[in-house]
Image 1 (tube, rainbow, N blue to C red):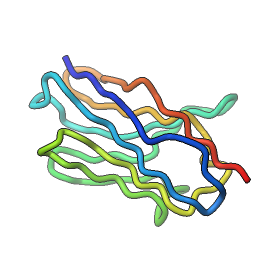
Image 2 (image 1 turned 90 degrees about the vertical axis):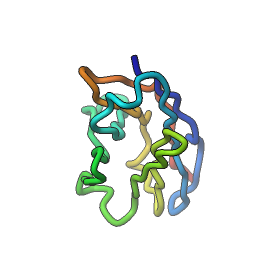
Image 3 (image 1 turned 30 degrees about the vertical axis):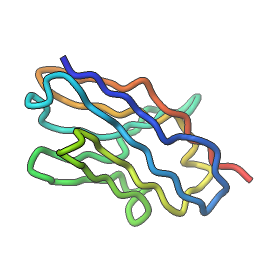
Image 4 (image 1 turned 120 degrees about the vertical axis):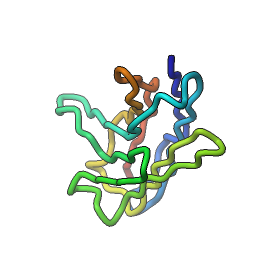
Length: 114
């Protein structure tokens, strides 16, 4: 009932920035929480950031002070601004939205390398 389309990934040098976007469509009113997971090969899937319907925000410790999650309700879009990127941030980033279940985006690759 909720479709998520991600964009904004790419290759960036250490210390650089990227902004990921996640555009939601469908049953928008059913969404309670949106956020971002990331998955690197051979690594555990990690919850990066979440934002609730009432704008409560949480980050995993490794990205605090560097990443910012935000939402534009008029555009039904959630963003992840990533600054001061490190090689260990390299992963596929997946947007998700919770309604009666968890909806997933298709993933967007972020590669941090010199």
